[in-house]
Image (cartoon, rainbow, N blue to C red):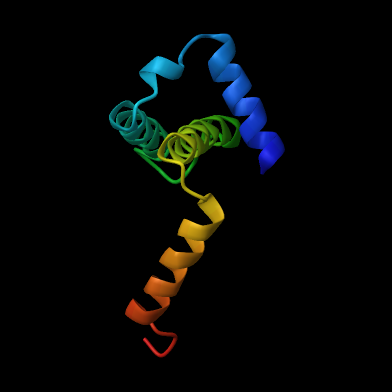
Length: 93
């Protein structure tokens, strides 16, 4: 994960985009890219796997940038959410 974050942040910094990557802007970008991912499946069950992978990568890149900007640990918040969901959605359901 560290190598991935390093590559993402280098890409951002080389272009001078850091000032624009506020939590608000990143949240908007995540939503926009998620909509573009959804668009891949808009009219039928057939999809272009290359296009889906590209849009999914965009969502993940913005999410990881949000993790960086907020200063949170991705693994920790994922595990915490999984624990919370385990209570909300027990295996018996």
